[in-house]
Image (cartoon, rainbow, N blue to C red):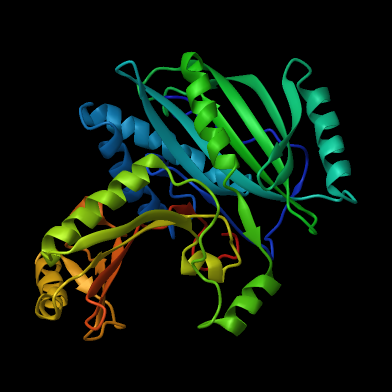
Length: 379
């Protein structure tokens, strides 16, 4: 997509739409804004788009915001026709100036016998259609894929242009074709941007997203449900946790330390990446969250007795809510709707062991995985 809401439909090989029996997900950075491709109706889509545009362009005049919204809304129907399941705007700031790209994801059916044949046929089709573009077979975390990098030209009608004038646009594009294992299906991710001078930065973000693609089978989901209560939901993944996530976890842990107000010896402090229970239940195994675990030891029994009530009182006043599994020796709190925005999705458990004189805490970051609506198997 261009900065003026250009055409975002993918130029993919001729493939059929398909709804997978796999549960598929990927992680989208929080600064990317999702477009309402799955809105319940046109009115809901229009409301969501206008809210998004006013958030992205707060200092632009209303007429510009309105036209930009129209330009975005004009893309929703082509997206539906192209079987787009996810679409998002990626606004970046480079040397003080705004830079925008669009990421769209679609899911297709193919008739190839295996992944190698599919990638070979797809590459042949793309090289015939785009002889000047760069097509490469790559190895992603989820397996083999094919990428195409090139450009496309289009003209945005004055009706849909944010400036109100007809606008010729050159888009730089990158597409990634990812076969889904043991199926006749494929994911197509596409990055488009009019900001060619910032292409490298947008492509870097896109590449990071591609390496978070993960899936689970129906059988894996059933296996999880069968063992629910004694399984491995939330098991730590062996991947490094992003520094910004660590920083946010440390900040929330420090608030908890202040609230509990205990004197003792600090220990632990490890941050582990993990898969949240909801994603694990879908069969997804790549990390989507992180947890900071620590404890305070050598605490007197009198102080420990008062620790959890102090925590509940302090965080409840800030909009946090206790969970149903809370007991006299253990409490779980989750940021509610009235909690500060920076705490949205965060939760922690705190427990006391009077006999050992220990206060233990686990602070958990929100799930960052992007997926389709809850009524769809896609995601």
